[in-house]
Image (cartoon, rainbow, N blue to C red; front, side, top):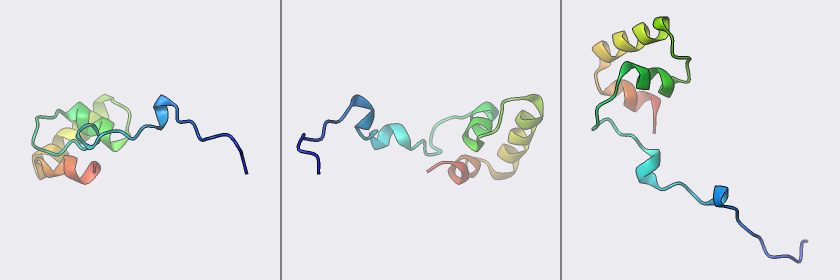
Amino acid sequence: MNAEPDKTSPGDIPTPDRLLHTGSEGEFTPEDVVLASGRDVNAKNLAWAERRMAEKGRACMDELLP
């Protein structure tokens, strides 16, 4: 056991929910969809995101993010 008290660094503070959850109430772009999916932003992935947005609307972001 360590006798020293636990110290938290600024990186250990939880991020507030308002910063974590995007929700789909705001506007988003195909680039946002690509980034939320973890893909690289390039012409192929932007085209994929545009198709996904056309098919699923706002739900496409809800499926990718919490």
